[in-house]
Length: 404
Image (cartoon, rainbow, N blue to C red; front, side, top):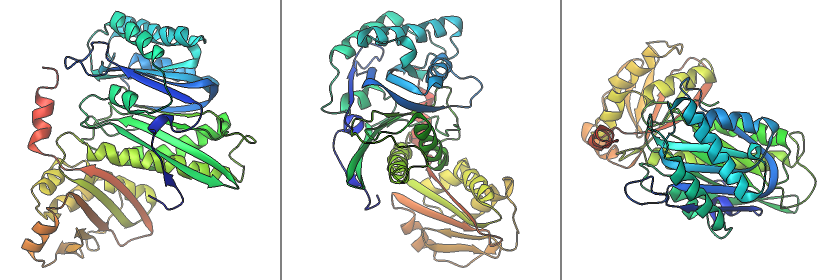
């Protein structure tokens, strides 16, 4: 993490002006928390980005409509059921969630965003959900974000939350965040959910600009299994409770706050990949020397999404052939005689062909739980990095009986 920022406790409610809670409404067989509310103390500038999956769930459509005003008061989430592919009833249920949360806060339903995550295609037990919303509303608190971070989880093995502060011209602004995501992860935004809060006085335009940039550079550069969920959503809310003049995109105070928001998103994205279903290794794939940044991103994502590459890393096998294969199948411009591949600091391919290396040393390096893979195309200045994880036996086990 950059030294520009100071880590804090509290997660998503570390910024002044926010409360949250998480309860069990009986949606999960385990009895764990499954309904969460995150609310600002009053309606505030907000922005959101959503999945581009054409089978987007009713909560996505409803939240997209509600956020159009650039303002929001709360986000209500249920886990254990995605309320996706549920037809007209699914939309009615999403609307009922918004109304239940709005009634508990005494605001209009249009000020509430809705998110659902879990199994696709199952009717939402809306009576349980609305009862859970009432319970959660009675427990709203600013002390800690853990209960809400736990309530949005599905196959996650740990709650993902972070908070940090940044000092700007004598003012101290706090940015907090929580996220869920473990499988069905390759966001294309514009079953991952992320909520970011700040007490900086951002305008609606500034929240949109900051979130769009942050998402592009963080959440849209991770992949666990190349699958884009029907329910992906990232929300940014700015309470402005830290005080001071409004911060617009052209304000000199905008860049430091935007950088803090991006850092929170980056750390949450790393947590999601680290927690990839069955993952044993966090992999950083960097492609450099590309014709453009877009080409570098295309090639890096192709590598990160290759099951053959991911299983090779799981087995600590420096199989560079799987890397050049993945680059070659992408749309990136490539000179076959120039490509270079470096596994965990060990060059395995140079000038497009095998380079003698110590297999034992490579196996030891690839046994670590964090692996860097660098590909240099040697044809330009473009560079991009994508985070991914390995593909293990456990991933198959988890997803083989996900519903049962």
